[in-house]
Image (cartoon, rainbow, N blue to C red; front, side, top):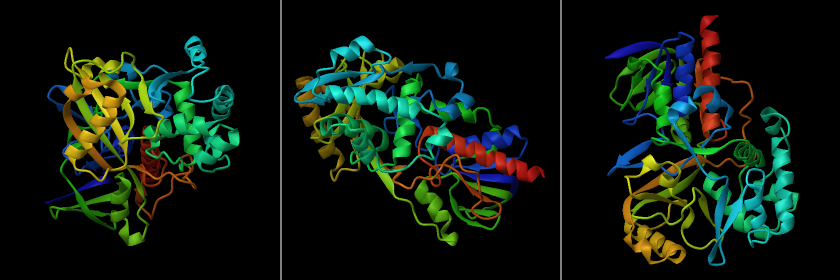
Length: 419
């Protein structure tokens, strides 16, 4: 058995789906091959006992330019977080509100121990800096680690340790703040200029919406690619599929494996673990992200997705998501016990009644994103004639750059095939 298509796209995550969508809109025939049993890559949602569990706690930043261009936000029925966070420090919770959207709430937190008054003034300076100029210009600014950038702005160690480490740890899975300052500034710009949201039916609704616009016979699941040879794709089943152009839109290590003949180095990855619980009552009553500003215990951040989007949980119940950075050297039961122990210190004896639903161990959650960071706005170039890469292997990681890189690769291929 074999086949042909103008373009073969390997990988059904957001990058591959957006590449396929662009090809479809340009009337270029394609075949999208996905190794798993569903589309979305890591942006998938499982239904477990009536609860919606995203594969690792995730959010949509509505300011992402590509998401605004591609997605129908109204159809996704977005629900929004409160713009701010609750920081656990000194045995108490301290609310940190966005001063531009909730100035009165922000004033109440001026004397909180999360940071100094001077730190709160410097947040305004950081916000102005990240909102200045174009996104293209932002990715051409001088680059350093995020820790150094925060120190150069003049943030106190208390502000860095109690807020930025857990907050950015929840975004980039790195409390050491080794990530590129360009990616940090881009992320801060997106948080500042839009809303943080969850679709009513889970993050998996995002790739589902894109896939619904593609021809049904253009997508094949459970189709792992064993190797690529010139313009041929060899599947694990032994089937060979030929195309005029190939696109690799898989996660970094898988792309590196398939590119072995061109000796590309395997990119490093950051890992995360997400533990989901069901509870009779939520541990807080506001749609906020809770950050561990103390730095003790496995849990870096905690959210109650059902407080943001009620369909995440069964009526009358709550869904709780605890995020751990990395893959702890514990088995499932030991990790659940450690998480319960930490959260009992936060919320009391009610935690013992929380029912564990599922734990997701995500080895390749994000690429390292340390300097030097690839410029996502640079012109698209093939790895070799007819072979292109999109997604996290050659770009910064986020929904924005996955979707943007897929679309831009699709544009270049379509232009080339039409000339």
